View 1: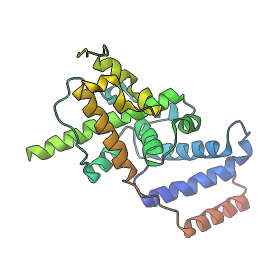
View 2 (view 1 turned 90 degrees about the vertical axis):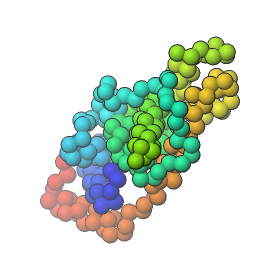
View 3 (view 1 turned 90 degrees about the horizontal axis):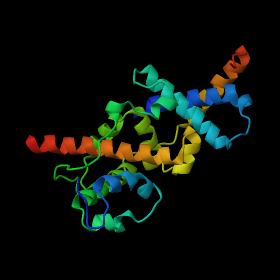
View 4 (view 1 turned 120 degrees about the horizontal axis):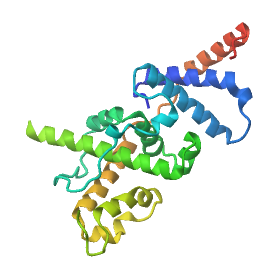
Length: 154
Length: 84
């Protein structure tokens, strides 16, 4: 999620400290694992905010600004990724995703959570999770196509 | 906007795509894709991206020292009464 092991370890520590501080507020309304995951995600989002990334809360992260929304793919140029994706380009494209998209993409496509689990963690609808993931993949596709086109012009 | 023989435009198909993919249905067998190269390419790209991403980041287990650090910080906080 943060793309850096040392920072991930710091955030892991912070998440467990928060857990220790807030455990008494857990009321059992959701599974403990869901509650813990949400707490950890909020720690990550706070850190991203501190680093100046444009997000305030999970709710805002779930709703990227209009200019960040990927377009649909009508009349797209005749260029497909054809199975060969540059790993570095993909990693950079993921890093560059708006935080809300990145969050869903990492949880689903990298960590392997199902939409119902993500919806519970982020307190959003399953449809919202599916939609955000789709938009994230479209945005990655745009970025990777751009990368491929730039490579072809060199 | 392309209207295909199956009566579904690319716009309509792509609007359904998040739900189709997310529900785990066999999207590749969707009638719209039989005669729509554009949407076939889109679906192939999205599947390629998802597959590539799965192989991108190895799962990294936190080192033992991290748990020790967390334990000592918790003890420190308990000692100072700083739990809020």
